[in-house]
View 1 (cartoon, helix red, strand yellow):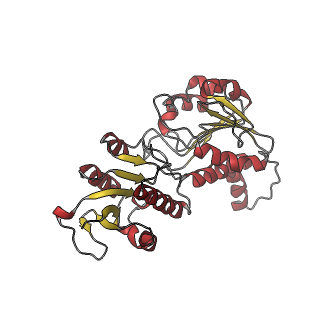
View 2 (view 1 turned 135 degrees about the vertical axis):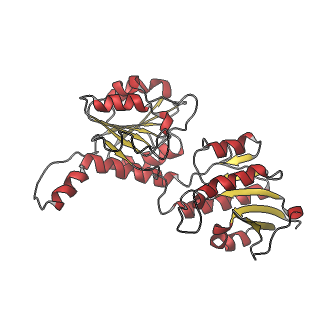
Length: 332
Protein backbone atom coordinates (compact mmCIF):
# COMPACT_ATOMS: atom_id res chain seq x y z
CA UNK A 1 0.00 0.00 0.00
CA UNK A 2 1.53 3.28 -1.13
CA UNK A 3 -1.38 5.64 -0.46
CA UNK A 4 -1.78 7.67 2.72
CA UNK A 5 -3.51 5.53 5.34
CA UNK A 6 -6.48 6.53 7.50
CA UNK A 7 -7.27 4.44 10.58
CA UNK A 8 -10.93 4.34 11.65
CA UNK A 9 -13.08 1.95 13.71
CA UNK A 10 -14.61 -0.60 11.36
CA UNK A 11 -18.12 0.09 12.63
CA UNK A 12 -18.22 3.54 10.99
CA UNK A 13 -16.81 2.63 7.59
CA UNK A 14 -20.05 1.78 5.79
CA UNK A 15 -21.63 5.00 7.02
CA UNK A 16 -18.98 7.26 5.49
CA UNK A 17 -17.66 5.06 2.69
CA UNK A 18 -19.19 7.01 -0.19
CA UNK A 19 -18.06 10.31 1.29
CA UNK A 20 -14.50 9.04 1.70
CA UNK A 21 -14.50 7.86 -1.90
CA UNK A 22 -15.71 11.30 -3.03
CA UNK A 23 -12.71 13.08 -1.52
CA UNK A 24 -10.24 14.44 -4.11
CA UNK A 25 -7.43 12.42 -2.53
CA UNK A 26 -6.24 8.85 -2.79
CA UNK A 27 -6.22 7.11 0.57
CA UNK A 28 -6.21 3.62 1.99
CA UNK A 29 -8.72 3.10 4.78
CA UNK A 30 -7.73 0.77 7.60
CA UNK A 31 -10.67 -0.64 9.55
CA UNK A 32 -9.85 -1.22 13.21
CA UNK A 33 -11.45 -3.67 15.61
CA UNK A 34 -10.22 -4.81 19.00
CA UNK A 35 -9.15 -8.07 17.38
CA UNK A 36 -7.12 -6.52 14.58
CA UNK A 37 -6.95 -4.24 11.56
CA UNK A 38 -8.22 -5.11 8.11
CA UNK A 39 -8.98 -3.53 4.78
CA UNK A 40 -12.58 -2.64 3.90
CA UNK A 41 -12.90 -5.88 1.92
CA UNK A 42 -12.06 -7.89 5.03
CA UNK A 43 -8.54 -8.86 4.06
CA UNK A 44 -5.91 -8.54 6.78
CA UNK A 45 -3.30 -5.81 6.84
CA UNK A 46 0.24 -7.14 6.97
CA UNK A 47 2.42 -5.72 9.72
CA UNK A 48 4.89 -4.38 7.17
CA UNK A 49 2.06 -2.54 5.38
CA UNK A 50 0.54 -1.01 8.52
CA UNK A 51 1.57 2.66 8.41
CA UNK A 52 -1.45 4.81 9.34
CA UNK A 53 -0.87 8.55 9.14
CA UNK A 54 -4.33 9.71 10.25
CA UNK A 55 -6.79 8.41 12.85
CA UNK A 56 -10.36 9.33 13.70
CA UNK A 57 -12.03 8.82 17.08
CA UNK A 58 -15.80 8.86 16.31
CA UNK A 59 -18.62 9.27 18.79
CA UNK A 60 -19.56 5.61 18.26
CA UNK A 61 -16.67 4.60 20.53
CA UNK A 62 -18.05 6.58 23.47
CA UNK A 63 -21.76 5.84 23.31
CA UNK A 64 -21.38 2.33 21.97
CA UNK A 65 -22.74 0.41 24.94
CA UNK A 66 -23.04 -3.14 23.65
CA UNK A 67 -25.97 -2.91 21.23
CA UNK A 68 -23.78 -2.42 18.17
CA UNK A 69 -21.23 -5.07 19.04
CA UNK A 70 -18.79 -2.70 20.70
CA UNK A 71 -18.08 -1.86 24.31
CA UNK A 72 -17.09 1.40 25.91
CA UNK A 73 -13.64 -0.07 26.64
CA UNK A 74 -12.95 -0.05 22.91
CA UNK A 75 -12.46 3.70 23.15
CA UNK A 76 -9.46 3.00 25.38
CA UNK A 77 -8.19 0.22 23.12
CA UNK A 78 -8.45 2.40 20.02
CA UNK A 79 -6.63 5.31 21.64
CA UNK A 80 -3.93 2.85 22.71
CA UNK A 81 -3.63 1.70 19.10
CA UNK A 82 -3.08 5.33 18.15
CA UNK A 83 -0.34 5.97 20.69
CA UNK A 84 1.29 2.60 19.93
CA UNK A 85 1.63 3.56 16.28
CA UNK A 86 4.91 5.14 15.23
CA UNK A 87 3.44 6.62 12.06
CA UNK A 88 0.26 8.50 13.03
CA UNK A 89 0.73 12.24 12.60
CA UNK A 90 -2.77 13.64 13.15
CA UNK A 91 -5.87 12.60 15.10
CA UNK A 92 -9.39 13.98 14.78
CA UNK A 93 -11.48 13.55 17.93
CA UNK A 94 -15.27 13.66 18.25
CA UNK A 95 -15.11 15.52 21.56
CA UNK A 96 -15.12 19.21 22.37
CA UNK A 97 -12.69 18.72 25.25
CA UNK A 98 -9.31 17.05 25.35
CA UNK A 99 -8.82 16.58 29.10
CA UNK A 100 -9.56 12.83 29.12
CA UNK A 101 -6.34 10.95 30.02
CA UNK A 102 -6.30 8.85 26.80
CA UNK A 103 -6.52 12.03 24.72
CA UNK A 104 -3.90 13.76 26.83
CA UNK A 105 -1.61 10.80 26.17
CA UNK A 106 -2.06 11.25 22.43
CA UNK A 107 -1.33 14.97 22.65
CA UNK A 108 1.71 14.53 24.89
CA UNK A 109 3.16 12.03 22.42
CA UNK A 110 3.53 14.86 19.91
CA UNK A 111 0.75 13.79 17.54
CA UNK A 112 -1.23 16.67 16.07
CA UNK A 113 -4.72 16.70 17.57
CA UNK A 114 -8.04 18.33 16.64
CA UNK A 115 -11.10 18.52 18.85
CA UNK A 116 -14.63 18.78 17.49
CA UNK A 117 -17.51 21.23 17.63
CA UNK A 118 -20.02 18.49 16.79
CA UNK A 119 -21.34 18.19 20.39
CA UNK A 120 -22.01 21.93 20.74
CA UNK A 121 -25.54 22.15 19.34
CA UNK A 122 -26.64 19.23 21.49
CA UNK A 123 -25.09 20.69 24.64
CA UNK A 124 -26.86 23.99 23.97
CA UNK A 125 -30.23 22.31 23.44
CA UNK A 126 -29.76 20.17 26.55
CA UNK A 127 -28.97 23.31 28.56
CA UNK A 128 -32.14 25.04 27.40
CA UNK A 129 -34.29 21.96 28.05
CA UNK A 130 -32.84 21.33 31.51
CA UNK A 131 -33.30 24.93 32.63
CA UNK A 132 -36.87 25.05 31.31
CA UNK A 133 -37.61 21.78 33.07
CA UNK A 134 -36.49 23.24 36.40
CA UNK A 135 -38.11 26.67 36.15
CA UNK A 136 -41.40 25.16 34.96
CA UNK A 137 -41.20 22.42 37.62
CA UNK A 138 -42.28 19.74 35.19
CA UNK A 139 -41.69 17.08 37.82
CA UNK A 140 -44.53 18.50 39.91
CA UNK A 141 -46.79 18.84 36.86
CA UNK A 142 -46.23 15.21 35.88
CA UNK A 143 -46.82 14.05 39.44
CA UNK A 144 -50.12 15.95 39.47
CA UNK A 145 -51.08 14.30 36.21
CA UNK A 146 -50.24 10.83 37.53
CA UNK A 147 -52.40 11.51 40.60
CA UNK A 148 -55.25 12.87 38.50
CA UNK A 149 -55.12 16.23 40.28
CA UNK A 150 -56.27 19.36 38.44
CA UNK A 151 -53.97 22.00 39.93
CA UNK A 152 -53.53 25.40 38.32
CA UNK A 153 -50.29 26.97 39.42
CA UNK A 154 -48.21 29.82 38.05
CA UNK A 155 -44.74 29.24 36.74
CA UNK A 156 -41.50 31.14 36.23
CA UNK A 157 -40.64 32.66 32.86
CA UNK A 158 -37.08 33.01 31.60
CA UNK A 159 -38.09 36.12 29.64
CA UNK A 160 -36.26 38.98 31.32
CA UNK A 161 -33.73 36.67 32.99
CA UNK A 162 -30.03 37.41 33.14
CA UNK A 163 -27.85 34.42 32.30
CA UNK A 164 -24.14 34.44 33.00
CA UNK A 165 -22.33 32.02 30.69
CA UNK A 166 -18.91 31.23 32.12
CA UNK A 167 -16.76 30.25 29.16
CA UNK A 168 -18.03 32.07 26.09
CA UNK A 169 -16.42 29.82 23.52
CA UNK A 170 -18.14 27.75 20.87
CA UNK A 171 -20.46 25.97 23.33
CA UNK A 172 -21.25 29.09 25.33
CA UNK A 173 -22.09 30.98 22.16
CA UNK A 174 -24.44 28.20 20.99
CA UNK A 175 -26.27 28.45 24.32
CA UNK A 176 -26.53 32.22 23.97
CA UNK A 177 -27.87 31.85 20.44
CA UNK A 178 -30.80 29.82 21.79
CA UNK A 179 -31.40 31.83 24.95
CA UNK A 180 -31.63 35.32 23.46
CA UNK A 181 -34.84 34.69 21.44
CA UNK A 182 -36.53 33.87 24.77
CA UNK A 183 -35.79 37.39 25.99
CA UNK A 184 -32.78 36.42 28.09
CA UNK A 185 -30.06 38.98 28.76
CA UNK A 186 -26.80 37.13 28.11
CA UNK A 187 -23.60 38.05 29.92
CA UNK A 188 -20.58 36.18 28.60
CA UNK A 189 -17.41 35.62 30.60
CA UNK A 190 -14.05 34.74 29.11
CA UNK A 191 -10.45 35.90 29.32
CA UNK A 192 -10.99 38.63 26.74
CA UNK A 193 -13.82 41.14 27.37
CA UNK A 194 -14.08 41.93 23.65
CA UNK A 195 -17.66 42.48 22.50
CA UNK A 196 -19.52 39.54 21.00
CA UNK A 197 -22.70 39.83 18.89
CA UNK A 198 -24.31 36.97 20.82
CA UNK A 199 -23.86 38.61 24.22
CA UNK A 200 -25.50 41.70 25.64
CA UNK A 201 -22.42 42.22 27.75
CA UNK A 202 -18.99 40.65 28.11
CA UNK A 203 -16.87 40.44 31.26
CA UNK A 204 -13.51 38.93 32.06
CA UNK A 205 -13.22 35.79 34.14
CA UNK A 206 -11.78 37.90 36.94
CA UNK A 207 -14.91 40.10 36.93
CA UNK A 208 -17.45 37.29 37.29
CA UNK A 209 -18.23 38.10 40.92
CA UNK A 210 -19.60 41.48 39.87
CA UNK A 211 -22.32 39.75 37.83
CA UNK A 212 -23.16 36.77 40.04
CA UNK A 213 -25.63 38.51 42.40
CA UNK A 214 -27.87 39.57 39.49
CA UNK A 215 -27.66 36.36 37.45
CA UNK A 216 -30.76 34.17 37.45
CA UNK A 217 -28.85 31.34 35.78
CA UNK A 218 -25.12 30.62 35.75
CA UNK A 219 -24.05 28.23 33.01
CA UNK A 220 -20.55 26.78 33.32
CA UNK A 221 -19.28 25.98 29.82
CA UNK A 222 -15.54 26.61 30.12
CA UNK A 223 -12.82 24.03 29.45
CA UNK A 224 -11.07 22.35 32.36
CA UNK A 225 -7.69 24.02 32.87
CA UNK A 226 -5.44 24.78 35.82
CA UNK A 227 -7.19 28.16 36.03
CA UNK A 228 -10.76 26.80 35.98
CA UNK A 229 -10.29 23.77 38.23
CA UNK A 230 -12.31 24.47 41.38
CA UNK A 231 -13.54 27.79 39.97
CA UNK A 232 -17.03 27.23 41.36
CA UNK A 233 -16.15 27.29 45.04
CA UNK A 234 -17.65 28.54 48.29
CA UNK A 235 -16.89 32.17 47.46
CA UNK A 236 -18.41 31.86 43.98
CA UNK A 237 -21.54 30.11 45.24
CA UNK A 238 -22.07 32.57 48.10
CA UNK A 239 -22.08 35.40 45.53
CA UNK A 240 -24.91 33.84 43.54
CA UNK A 241 -28.34 35.33 44.11
CA UNK A 242 -31.18 33.56 45.88
CA UNK A 243 -33.41 31.67 43.47
CA UNK A 244 -30.59 31.20 40.97
CA UNK A 245 -29.64 28.04 39.12
CA UNK A 246 -26.14 26.67 38.53
CA UNK A 247 -25.72 24.58 35.37
CA UNK A 248 -22.53 22.61 34.75
CA UNK A 249 -22.02 21.27 31.23
CA UNK A 250 -18.27 21.81 31.41
CA UNK A 251 -16.25 19.28 33.40
CA UNK A 252 -16.86 18.01 36.92
CA UNK A 253 -13.68 19.34 38.55
CA UNK A 254 -14.58 22.92 37.59
CA UNK A 255 -17.05 22.74 40.49
CA UNK A 256 -15.91 22.09 44.05
CA UNK A 257 -18.50 19.45 44.94
CA UNK A 258 -17.99 19.79 48.70
CA UNK A 259 -18.66 23.52 48.53
CA UNK A 260 -21.64 22.97 46.23
CA UNK A 261 -23.25 20.48 48.61
CA UNK A 262 -22.71 22.86 51.52
CA UNK A 263 -24.50 25.61 49.60
CA UNK A 264 -27.33 23.30 48.55
CA UNK A 265 -27.77 21.98 52.08
CA UNK A 266 -28.16 25.49 53.45
CA UNK A 267 -31.49 27.27 53.66
CA UNK A 268 -30.66 29.27 50.53
CA UNK A 269 -32.88 28.99 47.46
CA UNK A 270 -30.25 27.61 45.10
CA UNK A 271 -30.61 24.82 42.54
CA UNK A 272 -28.10 22.89 40.44
CA UNK A 273 -28.28 21.13 37.08
CA UNK A 274 -25.30 18.81 36.68
CA UNK A 275 -24.25 16.71 33.70
CA UNK A 276 -20.60 16.22 34.68
CA UNK A 277 -18.88 15.09 37.87
CA UNK A 278 -15.46 14.72 39.52
CA UNK A 279 -15.64 10.94 39.18
CA UNK A 280 -17.67 9.28 36.44
CA UNK A 281 -19.78 7.24 36.70
CA UNK A 282 -21.07 9.12 39.74
CA UNK A 283 -20.71 6.93 42.83
CA UNK A 284 -24.01 5.33 43.93
CA UNK A 285 -23.40 6.72 47.42
CA UNK A 286 -23.19 10.34 46.24
CA UNK A 287 -25.73 12.58 47.99
CA UNK A 288 -26.26 14.36 44.67
CA UNK A 289 -28.43 11.52 43.35
CA UNK A 290 -31.40 12.20 45.60
CA UNK A 291 -30.82 15.83 46.52
CA UNK A 292 -34.07 17.77 46.22
CA UNK A 293 -32.27 20.79 44.73
CA UNK A 294 -30.33 18.84 42.11
CA UNK A 295 -31.22 17.69 38.61
CA UNK A 296 -28.52 15.44 37.22
CA UNK A 297 -27.78 13.42 34.10
CA UNK A 298 -25.00 11.03 33.16
CA UNK A 299 -22.70 13.20 30.99
CA UNK A 300 -25.01 13.04 27.98
CA UNK A 301 -25.55 16.74 27.23
CA UNK A 302 -23.80 16.43 23.88
CA UNK A 303 -25.34 13.11 22.91
CA UNK A 304 -28.17 14.51 20.80
CA UNK A 305 -29.48 12.76 17.71
CA UNK A 306 -27.50 15.02 15.39
CA UNK A 307 -24.05 14.46 16.87
CA UNK A 308 -23.16 11.52 14.63
CA UNK A 309 -23.87 13.37 11.39
CA UNK A 310 -22.12 16.51 12.63
CA UNK A 311 -19.15 14.45 13.78
CA UNK A 312 -18.87 12.80 10.36
CA UNK A 313 -19.04 16.22 8.72
CA UNK A 314 -16.26 17.61 10.91
CA UNK A 315 -13.99 14.63 10.28
CA UNK A 316 -14.43 14.70 6.51
CA UNK A 317 -13.99 18.48 6.37
CA UNK A 318 -10.84 18.32 8.47
CA UNK A 319 -9.52 15.25 6.64
CA UNK A 320 -9.82 17.05 3.32
CA UNK A 321 -8.05 20.08 4.80
CA UNK A 322 -5.24 17.94 6.22
CA UNK A 323 -4.69 16.03 2.99
CA UNK A 324 -4.71 19.32 1.08
CA UNK A 325 -2.09 20.80 3.38
CA UNK A 326 -4.49 23.47 4.66
CA UNK A 327 -4.85 24.79 8.20
CA UNK A 328 -7.01 22.75 10.57
CA UNK A 329 -9.54 25.08 12.18
CA UNK A 330 -10.01 22.85 15.23
CA UNK A 331 -6.41 21.87 15.88
CA UNK A 332 -5.29 22.39 19.46
